[in-house]
Length: 138
Image (cartoon, rainbow, N blue to C red; front, side, top):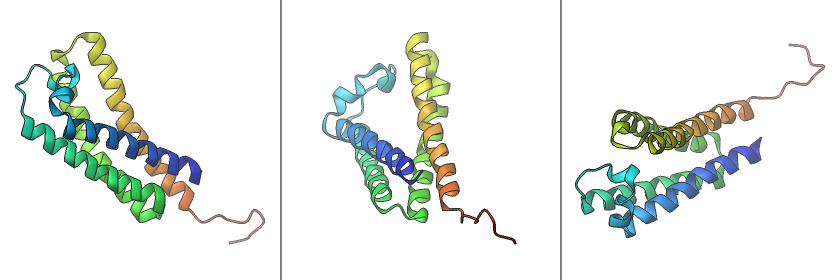
């Protein structure tokens, strides 16, 4: 289970790294995605800030994947969820700006972006519980 936790947090870190670099270094290209721009006016400053913030979260998640201390892992997952849950809700409220197929795919992906860290958070708690010997008496 330790390996699954490390891999899961590593996947979140890698995704944040890719999205962060894309938004920071190619903001217009990133904004051009229908699920990002959603028909709104382009704002280079906002896209660059989003990219930088996303890269900062990649750093925290990478440290957690390497360090694996419970407090670091749980803090990184909480940090990610503080972003992922509102992000899902915001897109849920704006899904009518997209085609039904695109909106459905987007909500599935954003839902997974909430469920994965929640699952990892639960896993981090299970992994850290002290094991009881099968024959021990309390």
